[in-house]
Image 1 (cartoon, rainbow, N blue to C red):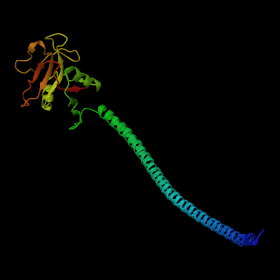
Image 2: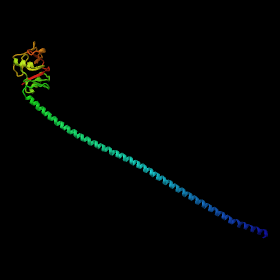
Image 3: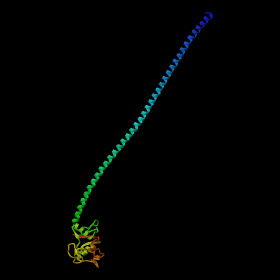
Image 4: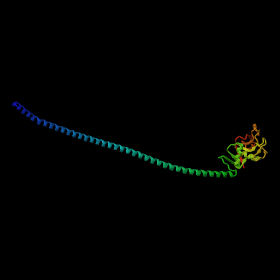
Length: 264
């Protein structure tokens, strides 16, 4: 081997020896840089995760506060509604109590009025019975009856049969006029057209009084009795302008309505 070859080999070793340590140092530096970058990334990720956790926690807290406020608002609303219901119930109960009290008062008033009504009806019945049993000497200017010296005159107009029944219900009958004095007296009292107790219903032309006694003397108006249309079977007395005119009897249909004059 010549000297040139030896020199070249020495140079190669030197080159190898020189570049070897430099390459190793450079690799070490790159590893350190990578480790530093990895550590920074890890720290950054940790910080980001921490921030995210904090944000999530804040969001949860805010959501909880919002839900709590909403629940409190709903609770207050429900509470107000319940209070309003309670007030309404109390008011209705109060009204019910007042109405019940008023009902009891009205019931008591009704019972009191009913009792007074019964008492008044009893008094009226008693007075009516008393008046009916008295002598026919009292005069009633008002009411349904007029009593004139032993006679009873109804202010209600009825046909002849109903008028007679009216008298009978009061223990009397339609009046019988069998004397001039009685005719004159009754004529002076009567101020209207009234039935008397004379009829020929049983037999045409055969006038009889309600006690079945025959007519002996009549006080007929001129042209009466005429039995007009063959239907005039009952007798009325017509008030006269002159007290001296005793001829005031007239026959007419028994279905006509007149007042009745009764006597016991």
